[in-house]
Image (cartoon, rainbow, N blue to C red):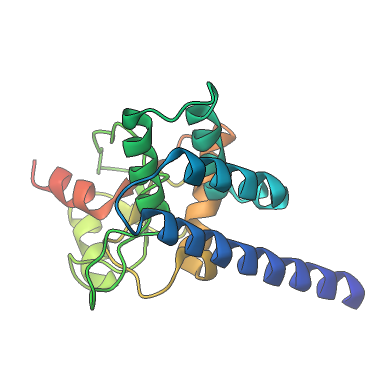
Length: 204
């Protein structure tokens, strides 16, 4: 790859990250009072449309599709407002207490969460886990007959840790989520699950 092409790609990545930062900030502002109104929803939708290149990001695309569907009839009713508040909280990890590390974005999780099959399944662990260290988590997977590893097209489950010290937009944690969402949208049978569900299934 030429040096010019590399610079172009790097500059594009920096621009995308700056826009995602702005979107996360916008989402935080909207949910700050615990209510999403019609004007805020419309402004959010217009912002995403105006920054259309961001919809190449699978997580942002998912948010865009949800807002588009909610505003399809031009009216934000109370149930839709509550749903959008929840979506935005999940998108920007907004439901955290002062002094607490931010919780993982749960926006792309499989709904409903699947019943897990541990034996012979491949698990990719990403983020920071309340369960324990990465080694502890991998040992738990192995003990139940699963195989811990990196994210590939053969991965059965991507498990997102309860906490992370960085925004998903700028970390390898976030890139794995984006890649898994993209894989899933292209028909690859990967499940994206939260640590809480993973731990709960281990206790069955």
